Length: 150
Image 1: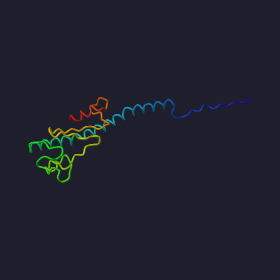
Image 2: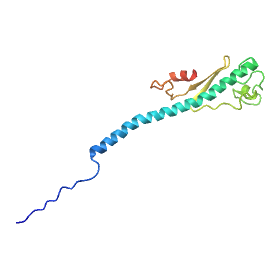
Image 3: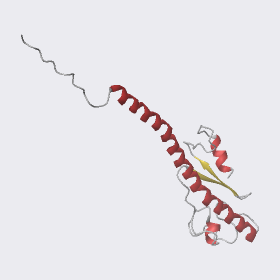
Image 4: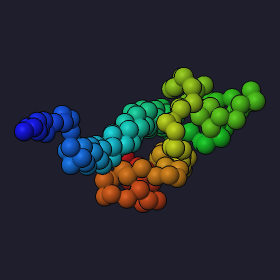
């Protein structure tokens, strides 16, 4: 009589499909949580980068007013400056020529300045696309007002 030799079932080593699926799902969930946090950090950094020169400019505008009795005009034509006769069209000529600042400020990308010479108000305005400045989960035109209120 012949005996049949049966081999023991071979056990395969490695990950099961369920284990791989669980790892992929967990990585997707982590990415969905972490990526928006990194994006918000970049937005916050740009906004913080704009605040310091904005405050410095406001201080120089007030110092100019205290020493000259009026705010610098937007076209550099107040008394005490060359009135733009050197061909410059820089709106900050009064402050530059009066040694209140060295050069025109350079704002971070997406920001533009809004200066009102009659009141000396200087604000930064966001150009689209807007940042979510106030953290309400939307990035809309209302955030330009928040930036101007710094």
